[in-house]
Image 1 (cartoon, one colour):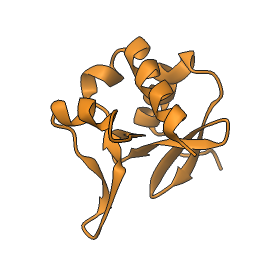
Image 2 (cartoon, helix red, strand yellow; image 1 turned 45 degrees about the horizontal axis):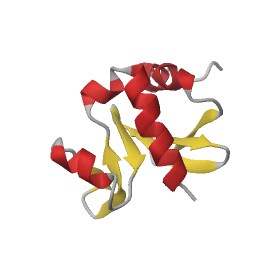
Image 3 (cartoon, rainbow, N blue to C red; image 1 turned 180 degrees about the horizontal axis):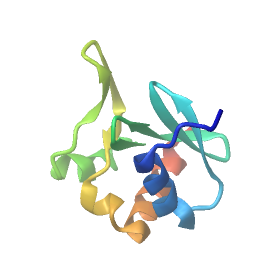
Image 4 (spheres, rainbow, N blue to C red; image 1 turned 60 degrees about the vertical axis):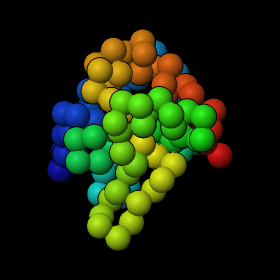
Length: 105
């Protein structure tokens, strides 16, 4: 049986092509993004979220982005949605992803 295709996941991975070592695994009903074993991003229901800290979170909030809520009872406050204009610019997305990977344990 062929694996299920996810066009949004494929788009994100293509945009992140300039960031070596990025892998993707199914999780949370979506996908987890990893680099060198560090979990730095989430793809869920057509949205992309990156790991943040107090400093980097400001750039997301300034653009009106929200934290990851996989359901009504759970919110992961350290993962914020990546703005569409950042996702559409591969160079800028790689910079934001690089910052998120440095924060990942």
